[in-house]
Length: 261
Image (cartoon, rainbow, N blue to C red):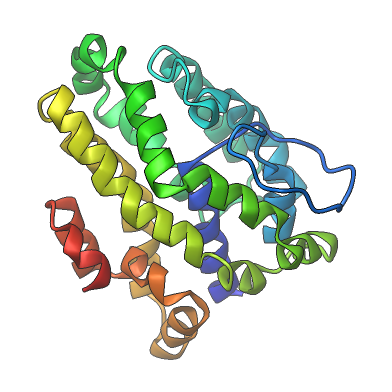
């Protein structure tokens, strides 16, 4: 049970990293992945077995992040995203037995970091970031295939199967490799390009994006050795950096070679 919850939180953070509007699924017919189509978060969440009590709290937040998926007007939409995130957290607190391990809070901790912990710094950089963030995100997406890979992930027949049987975090964990490859490309791309346009904004953004991985790595470190070994075996090798505190610390400090140790 504990290992399943760890895998669940690990997978959810990828959806939190590149969000899109929740789209109900009407057909399992495969279609060609395309960057501009809406991400099928519904299938991903059902594949993960995210319970209804959590969905009713977090779906409005996911829907508020459409600007991130479309990579348009991202900075100006930040306050709306912050507001919806706070409402989601409040809603989950009322559902006492729904998310007692605070999986959503950990998976979306980048948003909390931007909206609360570092909001003053982000506000000071807003005028510099506003004209350039959309282009930086779009450029890095074209280089790293983040949206394409996440769309393909949602359309994978194994993920769809997991969605139809009430969720299976182990199946999902087996298919995260391409997403981790995109992440290994996206983090340095965004960091370097933002730093070039707005001094220090790339480092601040990198620190923000690293928050959920830190939270998950702490959860993994607290597991018993057999469970920890099981998690490591189930997660694609390309994703191992995301649960290794030493590698995460090096990445945060700008050593992007640490993705591969």
